[in-house]
Length: 300
Ligand code: PMP
Image 1 (cartoon, protein in one colour):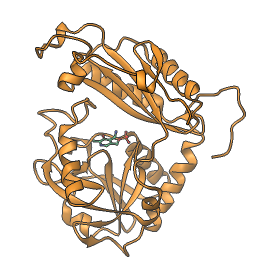
Image 2 (cartoon, helix red, strand yellow; image 1 turned 30 degrees about the horizontal axis):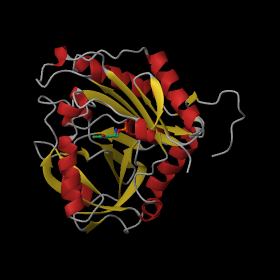
Image 3 (spheres, rainbow, N blue to C red; image 1 turned 180 degrees about the horizontal axis):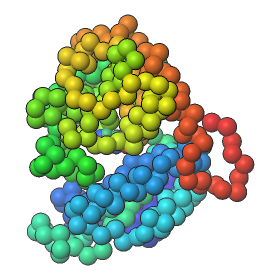
Image 4 (tube, rainbow, N blue to C red; image 1 turned 180 degrees about the vertical axis):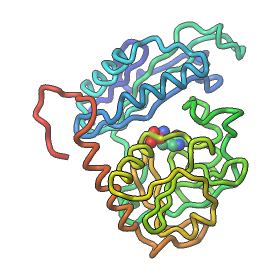
C-alpha cells in the first residue's frame, strides 16, 4: 500500500506518526476551524473560497492562523505532491493549540496546523446512480445567533447528533430543520429541491453553511437558465418536489430519491440533477490551483 503523508505543524510525517497534544484545545473543546477541500485532476477546486471561509471562521473565534493564504496554499500543494495525489479530499485543520485544562483560549500557544489528504468517496459509488434515501431528524440546526453555522468550527456535535439519528434509522444522511421548522441542510451538505423550472436552496440566514459546492451549483443553474432562488421551504415542499439533491465537497452532488418514506419524483435521480451533476464534474476538472503545474493535463 502507498505510504500516506500528513502535514502536522511544519512537518510531513507518515500517517501513523501524525499526532497532536492531548492539551490541544482542538481536542479538549473542539476549539478550532477547518475546511474540507477537493483536488480534481490535479486542480484544487475553489481554494481561494475555502481559504476565505477558513480565515473568516478564524476571525470570528479570534484565532490567528499562523500562515498567509499563500503559505497555506503551498502546504496543501506540497502535501498532495508528497502523496502523489491528483484526485483527493483534503482536510485542513487549524486548532487553537496546546493550552491548560481551562477553557481560556488565551492560555494556548501556537495554533496547530494540519493537512490530511485522502482518496475519499463519502457515499458508495452505487448511491450516485441510485440516489439516497434520507429522513428528517428531530435535532435542529444550531441557531445562527447562538453559534453561527458560518463558522466552520471543529465543534460538529450538532451535526453528529443528526448523523446518529440517521444511522439509527438505517439511512446514510438526514435533513435538519432550523429552530422555526424550515429546512436548513444535511449533516454535512446543503439541500436543493426542484419543481418545474424552479430550483430552491435555503438562504444562509436560515442556518445552513454557505457551501462552496452549493454556490457553484447556484451559478451553474443560473447559467443554464433555471429559476434559481434562495428561499425558505418546509418539509412539505421537499416531499412534493420533482427532484431533490444534496451538495458538499465530500458528497459532491448526489440525488435524493426518498425523504421520510415519500418517494421523490419517479424514485430515481432526475434529469435536472443529472444535468447539474454533469456540468459540475466538467467544471471541476478544469478549474483551480494547479498541483503539478509542469505536467500536461490528463483527462478526468
Ligand atoms: N453544510 C455543512 C454543515 C457542512 O459541513 C458542509 C461541508 N463543508 C456543507 C454544508 C457543504 O459545504 P461545501 O460545499 O463548502 O463543502
